[in-house]
Image (cartoon, rainbow, N blue to C red):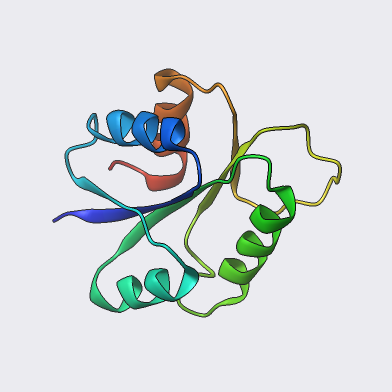
Length: 119
């Protein structure tokens, strides 16, 4: 059974990197929704295993996106990973896990194991 990972990004390099890293997880399919509504629609069709937010130089948008996903009944229990481009200014826990902007395959796999338990 395949599960979906939703990737919200405005960075072609991050999109490519995440797609490449997800190839190491054959039971996972990458999806690139253009808005939150597409994520909510996808939750009605299949399981969303994880949501990754990598919004370059847009910390306010990333924060609002995280908050919206955590409040919505269809995604509030879905783990969210935030790729950080700068150090967080707040100590507020927005996401379930964080990756540095220059993360590597080992960092990514550790987060996948931690948040998805076996996929």
